[in-house]
Length: 172
Image (cartoon, rainbow, N blue to C red; front, side, top):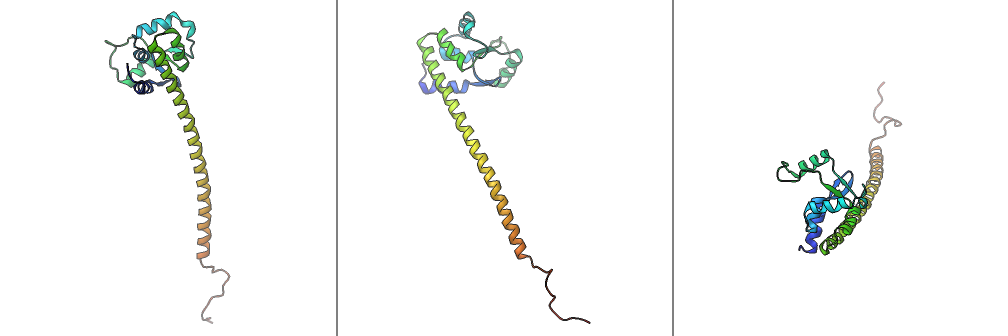
């Protein structure tokens, strides 16, 4: 069995973004749970009422093809021939009621912790973006003030020739 940190690292690397959701592929979950992918899929199919579309969905052929290209899987020979199931955070939580081994329970706990860390990181990231935007806006205002100061200095340095009497001899 892998150590806790190794499991969390593997989970973090396995999370992918599909249909604008963070999900885990059935093959990755099966590996983490220590079962074959077909066993996991069979358990899910026997309990389809527990897995609505926002918990788990099967990839379309196009999505599966794109994902395989992304991971560099060349051919279908010897690999998965059917599009995988992908599980959202809620789907992974539901899997704990379908796969009830001690290893599955520990892995589910680790997965939930990783998803919580991702949400915390995302919240901190949004705060950081807001602060950067505030700094850029205040910097822009400061730049406008500095530009105005430069303009005033240039005006002070330019001689005012318009209202002066010329100096020198008058020619008749």
